[in-house]
Length: 429
Image 1 (cartoon, rainbow, N blue to C red):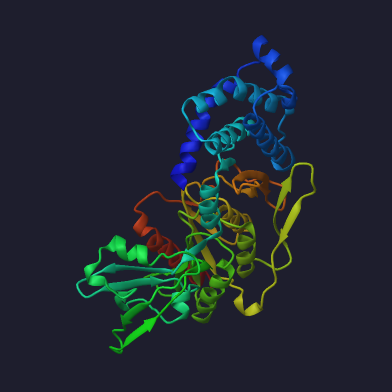
Image 2: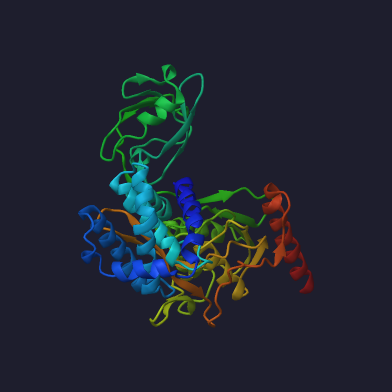
């Protein structure tokens, strides 16, 4: 999906120079005749394109964080009529391809130069994007590898039907859909484990701990992936939680991990957000409750022409509140909600950031589906600190710059927390 989105962006950029030049006399003549497409006497197919483009433009005019101009839309229609339409039809592209690709050109033309996020996606890409961004999957939730005895389970998604029916890590699958897995290639096994939504697959497996054989028939269903995991730390009293992405269930997962952190009397916590592209801002808001005072303003977003929409720190049971030292690991791929969370904790002096500048993507991005299930992805607002400061396009600047061996970052962060602890205890002796 990312490759498809990137390809659209690159193609759109090649048209930007075409659109950004001043209006010529010939173009002006075209504009005067295309302001009302119904008078052009063009084909019904052409008119359907223009109607669709109008829907895209109207959505941007209402929802986009920056103003879009009617005259720019008219210029696009002129170029579509004179160049884009004839070019794509000359390449024997389908009507859907012409509509969707041209809509992508339109969005790229109308958005601001520094906006690398807003885009248009055809239906299949839109579905994949939505699932990725929301952290959803529709499958059995099983990952593993072949060995000499069968298919060894390496991970089962905790919210999948396979997990609910008992399958666990290190179980050894012998048969899938009555087929001996030892006679199958890995690709064939993966295909059997990704049936259509609502379909079940019979799985027979053995459990090394008791040597027994089990049979289940998990059903492929939609679920939220788990993105929160422990990372081993060699320094006693310091724990590390890695959050690979935010989704709707991140607060629930964090609650389980934070309960253990507090029960074990941790004095230092590392939150690894490297490579985390973000997710729903409400997830970042929710997990801030473990570290910030309740009922204070967390952050706010402000859409064009509308009052600011403030996010408050939720109130949680006092048991779950963590008062110890925190280091958050970030890198150039830490974006969106992960930056929002990191930046607010940094601004409140509740955490120190370690790594390199983050992506600079603290935006509110919204999905708008068209009637044909294609999707318009728009930046609808920028993120602000409670004092009104806007999150920078340059990203967050770490308190502890680190660009060394990524595998050692957790160790150095833990060592820093240990030394800080020793210094603080020494100051009180």
